[in-house]
Image (cartoon, rainbow, N blue to C red):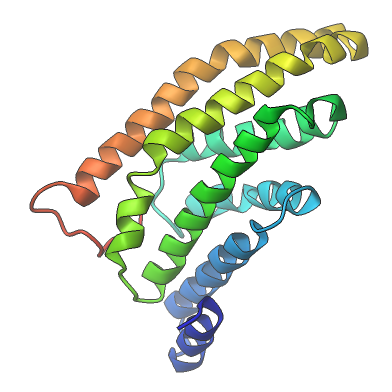
Length: 205
C-alpha cells in the first residue's frame, strides 16, 4: 500500500471528529513533507520553512515533542537555508552542502514516514528502528556539515555586515551544546522505544 493510498483510506474511513481531523491533517503534513524531500534547492528551502509548523504542532498539543529541542532544530535549519545558503551562494558548491542535504533528506524521509504510518495505524518496526538508529550517523554528519557551511560563509558575511559576521561566530559556539542536547535526547528516545520490555511501535512522540 502506497503512502497516497493509505492516507486516502484513512481519511475516507474515519468518522468525522476533532481527533480524526487532527490526525488526518498530521498524516497529510508528514506525507507531503516526506514527498518533497526527493528534490533539493527551492523545495528544500520551502520544506525547511514549513517546518515552522512543527512548533505550532507542539504549542497546540498536536504532538508531545519537547518544545526546546524542536525550536532549536527548526531555528538551525531556517538559519542554514535562509541565513547562509541563500545569502551566500558561494558556499553552495562546497561538499558540506551536499552532505548536509543528504543527512537532512534521509533523516526527514524516515521521520515523516514513521509518523505518518503510525498516525494511520500502521506500526512498522523497521521504520521505528531506522528512526531511532540512523541518527547516530546522520546527526553528526548534518550538524558537522552545517557548522562547516557557517564557517565557510564567514569571509562573505564579514564583507556584507560586521554585526552579522559576529552573530554567525556566536552561532558556531552555540552549535556544540545544541547538538549535545539534540543527540542525547535522541539517545533517550531510542532507549525508550527500542529498550528491553518497551512497547516498540505504539506511541508517536
